[in-house]
Length: 97
Image 1 (cartoon, rainbow, N blue to C red):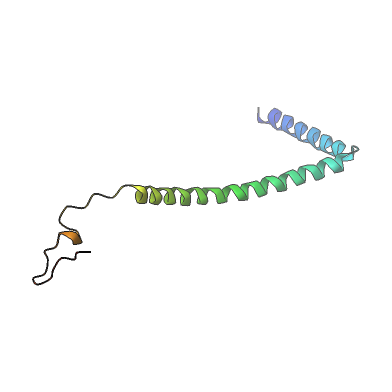
Image 2: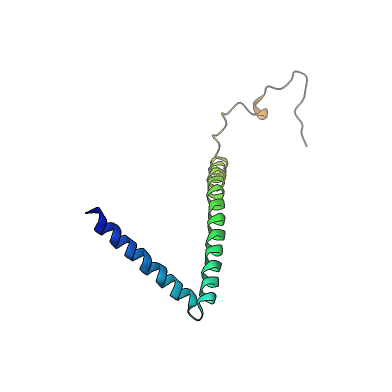
């Protein structure tokens, strides 16, 4: 049973080789091959660029978290902890303008 499958695969390989040979001899095949190669180069370039986007997205998420934490309102100070609530020094007079 293995021989018919191999025979079939061999015939298929022979047919595909013949088809590739005929395609390479066809007019305009050279231009089509150059276009496909140019397309492959562009796809490679796009893949390189998208790999860089992942790093940028990670950095952007980190920065957004930092901005959010800075934008949150700070808790109100307790009354009496500011400079205006300190007791006056003895012997100093309040300023009257």
